[in-house]
Image 1 (cartoon, each protein chain N blue to C red):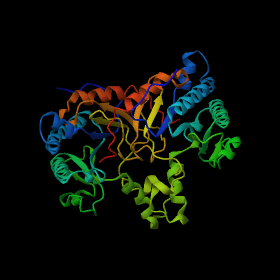
Image 2: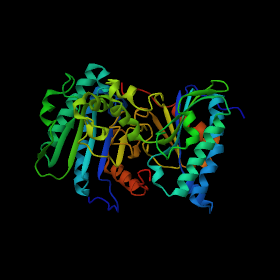
Image 3: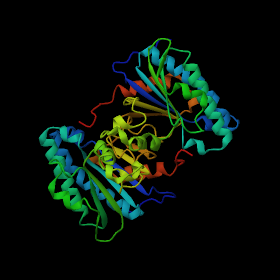
Image 4: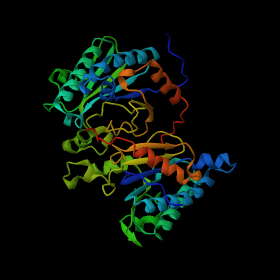
Amino acid sequence: MAPPRFKRLPKHIGIIPDGNRRWAQNKGLSKEAGYEFGLEPGIQLYEKCLELGIKELTFYGFTQDNTKRPAVQRKAFQKACVDAVKKLSNRDASLLVVGNSTSPLFPPELRAYTTRQTFGRDLIKINFLVNYGWKWDLNYALRNSDSNHTNMVKAIASTDVSRIDLIIRWGGRRRLSGFLPIQTIYSDFYIVDDMWPDFKPEHFYDALAWYEEQDITLGG
Amino acid sequence: MAPPRFKRLPKHIGIIPDGNRRWAQNKGLSKEAGYEFGLEPGIQLYEKCLELGIKELTFYGFTQDNTKRPAVQRKAFQKACVDAVKKLSNRDASLLVVGNSTSPLFPPELRAYTTRQTFGRDLIKINFLVNYGWKWDLNYALRNSDSNHTNMVKAIASTDVSRIDLIIRWGGRRRLSGFLPIQTIYSDFYIVDDMWPDFKPEHFYDALAWYEEQDITLGG
C-alpha cells in the first residue's frame, strides 16, 4: 500500500517505543517477553520513513534509568537493542548508536556502532539511543572542559543528533522521560495510546497528519 | 466552591499560558491586546493552588525567543509580566523571577525579584520566567567555569527551580517551547485546547484528575 501524501513532513522524527512490558502482561506473558515484539515494528517504521523520504529517525532504545530494573528485564531490552541495531545495519542507513559505551551496561556488540557508519545506501540517518542518560549527555559538556565551549548544543555527548521536529510516543504516557532534552526543546509531541508491539502504519500516518496542521514558530 | 479532592497531587506545577494572541484575534482585537487578559487567570490559578496546598508553581512568562516578535507585542507581554509579578508580591508567596536580567529586554522593575523573597506568608513557592532562554539557562553552566561543577543540574541558571511534576499548557500546542529543559525531563504533560485567557478552574481540576492516574516511574 502506498503511503498517504503529506504537504509538510518533519525532517527528524523521534520514536519513544513504550509499552512493551504492559503489552506482554496483557497477553499473559512475563514482562520481559515484550521487548522482542518491539523489533518488527521498528523495521516497519523504518521502511515507512524511507518510503516518505524522512531524513532522520531516532529510536529511544534504553536509558541508564531503565537499567535499574530487574536483571531479567535489563537483559531482554539489551538484547532487543542489539538485535535491532544489527537488523538496521543490514539495511540502507547511516547509523549511529549514542549512549555511555564505557559502562558495563552498554552491550559490547554495539561499541562498533558508536561512530556513524553508512550501511548500504545513505538514504536516512538513524540514531539509536543505547544506555543513554540525559545527565550523562549534558554533563559531558562540563566534563569535556578542555573544549572551551560556551555553547551547550555543541558540547553535549549527543551533538551529532539534530533537532527533532516530531516525537511519537507509544503506550499512552505524555512525558519525555529524559529523551534528548536539547534536541526536543521545540519538538511537537504526539501520543499513541496503543502499546509499541501493536504498532500499525496508521499510528504513524495519523501522527504525520496531525503534525502538518501544527504551526511551527520556534518561539518567534 | 470547594475544590475537588485528589488522592495524589503534584508538588510542583509548570504553567505554559499560551494562546493570548489567538484569543485576541478571535475577539476581533489586535494580537497584543490579549496579554492583559492573562493576568486574572494567573491569580485565579494561584488561588486554586493555595486551596489545594500545591508547594511550587512556575509560570512561563516570556522568553528570549519571544522578544523577536514585533515591538508592540513585546511591550505588551513585558508589561503583563511586570503586572503579574507585582500582583503576586501582594499575596502570600515566596517569589523568584528567573531570566536574563542583564539584557535591556528584561523589565528593570523586576530586577528586585531575581533573588527569592517571601511576601506575606510563605505558603507557596512561585517562579516566574521573564526573558528566559533555554540556551541562556544551560550555557550558564559552561560560562560559570570557576564553579568546578560536574553536574549540570546544580550549575544551570535556574538551579533554584525544582523538578516539575506536571506541566499544563493552554492553547492546544503540544510542545515544551524551551520551558526549563532540565526540570521538565520527567514531567507529565497535559494540554488544554482552550486559550489561556479563557481559563476555567475546571481545566486545572481536569489536569489534576488526569495526573493522579499517571504511573510515575522516573524511568525505573
